[in-house]
Length: 154
Image (cartoon, rainbow, N blue to C red):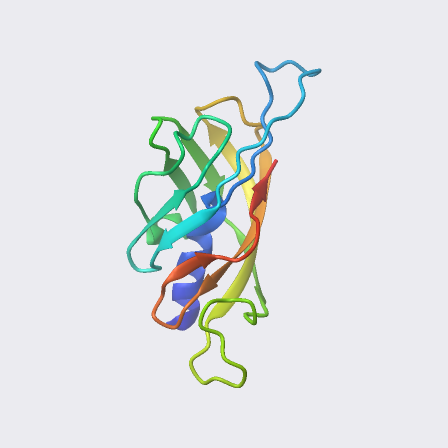
C-alpha cells in the first residue's frame, strides 16, 4: 500500500516544480526559456496543486489534479488554460533525510522518490516535444506530497 501511495505521489509530481525548456515558434536559433515551479501541495490519494510557476504559459499554477490520475503519466491543466502531458515516470527511491518530518532512526519517516520521464505534449508556449523531466518528491507516511529540490524538464 505504501509503495502504491509513493507511486501515485511521485507520478503526480512531474509537473511540480517543472523547469521546462521552451522553443520559440519552432525556430532552431531561438534561445530556450524555462518554466520553473517552486511549490507542490496535496496528497497522494487526493488532489495536488503546483504553484509558484514563472515563465511559459502556466498562469502561475496548475488547477487541482487528482494525484492518482497521473500514475501512468497524465495531463496537467494550467490556470492559463494550456495543458502539459507527461509520460509515465521512472521512479528511484532515495534518502529522505532532507524531507519534512524526517527524524533520525524514526519509525514513521517520510519516503523520497526521484523521478524522470518524457514530456509528450504541450498546448502552451511551444515546449520541446518530446522533452524530458526529472525531479524528486517527499511523501509523508500520511501521503502528504512536498517538493524535494528542483524539478526540471527540457
